[in-house]
Amino acid sequence: MQKGRKSETGAVNKKQQESALSRDAATEERTTDMDIPNEGKYVCKLNGQLVIYEASTGSLCGAVPCVVAAPPANEGFTFKHTMVLVKADGTIQTKATATLQAVFGWDGVDPFWLMDCSLDGGVMREAEFEIVGGPETGDKGGQYFKSQWLNPLGGGMKTPLAADRRSVLAKYGGKFHALASSATTGKSAREDARPTGAVQQQLPTAALKVPTALRAAQAPPPPGAPTATMDEAWSVLNESNPGKPAEAIEKIWFDTIAQLYPNKSNTDLKPHEWGKLKVEFADALPM
Image 1 (tube, rainbow, N blue to C red):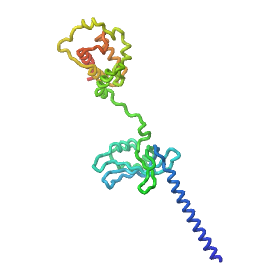
Image 2 (image 1 turned 60 degrees about the horizontal axis):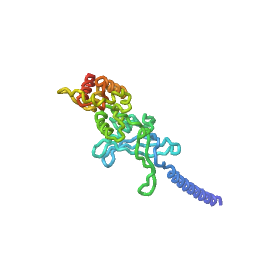
Image 3 (image 1 turned 135 degrees about the horizontal axis):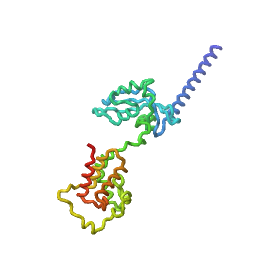
Image 4 (image 1 turned 120 degrees about the horizontal axis):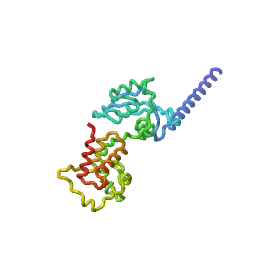
């Protein structure tokens, strides 16, 4: 009887264990589904070694093991992100390499540095980065977290570096001026940092409006006098004053015009007068 009861007890215990395992498996499956983060951006860290490998296609890739650090609702969720460093045709993916440099401090020379420094205790383990991703349905119907982008913390919200002022003005200053001149509102464009209408209004009234009789009496340009456009004069002025703020350059601009042509505003100058201004600004070019 004892043996029978023992067998019966053992069968009961076995059924209980199987039932418990089934419940645990079901719970784990439901938890996995619930824990898949929604579409969004997540602060992550490495939770393993970054592996550099060659894919079957011939491309050089990096497998990045990640764990979510924030927000708290998804903290601890793990997944793998894949980055292509070199395409199968040998083209280096400059955006991917630049991202790895920005996030982990890689110098961009030896990709295996990323493996060496991502081991337990390595410097890369302290770095935080941003992953953009969300749920994806697999071929067999199951869901998983698909990471789309790995970015430096802050991602695309970081303020970009300002363009070089002189380079941009040299390329587009004339176009901005032409667009502003054709505008029906008559407002001056400020984007090219050229002296604005508001600044022109600060000049004496006589400098803004020249009597018609005085204009007619002005002497013709001397033979062989150099000519230029306002844009050319403005470009030379910027070249002769590298590093100065826009306000200082505007002051030099108006002061020089007032000195050479006290009865004129910059809107009244002729090509030979712009040529003289260009020469004046060129004399100040740093050697």
